[in-house]
Image (cartoon, rainbow, N blue to C red):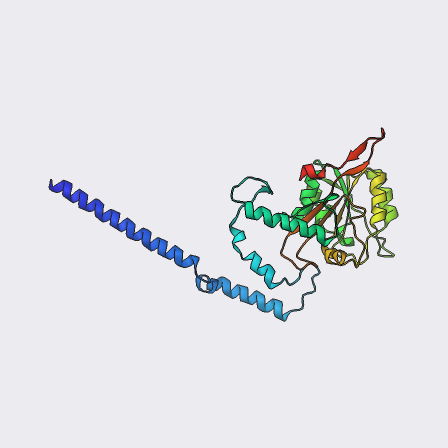
Length: 302
């Protein structure tokens, strides 16, 4: 009897202790959930302020960087951060995405409107986190492993994701998983050598040609790129990430008239959040030898 009573009292004491611990833990968690970062993590807060001072006092000359707006920062720190939304609007792998679907559809509509595109002729994916994942998504949608690509060489003003490699090493995923033959600028004029590009394309027979730049100061001749791509049965991708704001403002030629796919970012000259966008053509691509229309199937790879 006495032993049973002792065991009962002991178990009650243990339960009470566990309950107190749980309450204390919940209290600490609730406190952390409602603390400002300068209280919860002073060390990180100092680093944030150090970076803010650096940005305010320095003159940033990196073309791919910009200062975004307060409204964008407010969206980035909103409750949207908490939601998973894998899949596409109306076809998600998670529940509770009815609001996220509306947000994504709004972003798609605004992306098309920014470049005066018809939704009947162009589709758009706004899910990439930046330009590099956007380009890789295009490659994996249009190409098979070891298919051939041609992009402007990095030392000549191209980008890492356009198939860059050195004589001893393949640098980016685009040169590791696909066969890359970069084109170059004319060393005398500093301009893209379109004649040499056309000559090499006839020999190399790429499946994808990339009209894109990171530090090339001239406008691109998209019509010439289109002619070379058509001659070799290649897709034409324009990576306009560094000049997308100028295209939207109609200051420089638009790639949309000639390209099959256009990739860009939203955080450079568009001054938005850090993200990427992929535009892809819909409808008829060409006419086959038997006179039957050949349709774009890029949307099916989305």
